[in-house]
Image 1: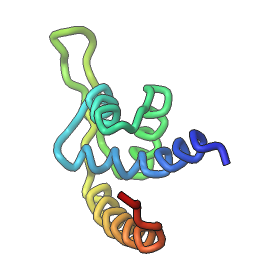
Image 2: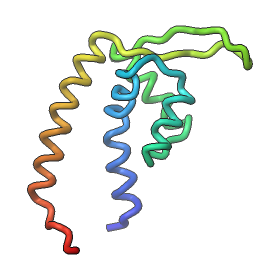
Image 3: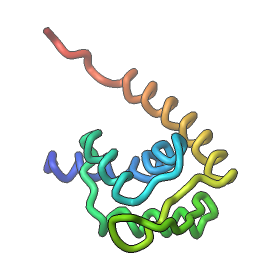
Image 4: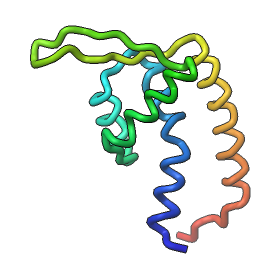
Length: 111
């Protein structure tokens, strides 16, 4: 097993959940979302983020609005819809169950 590939696959699997979690705190511009993901060690590039945002928007989980920017062209800000909030609540519950299940199987670290 290539460890880097396994780590990348685990991160990829939770990105949509993380995007919804970030937007649950308030509307955000794509660059803000990327920065939050990078700060959390979930390295993401624009080429990965935009298809996920589009997919979530097409599923009715996100909406967006254009806002004028003083530093260039207008910016697209994303927000959770009611359906997005419901989905996030379900994913939160699933995540907690998954973490509990995985933790029950892990061998404790020796100190």
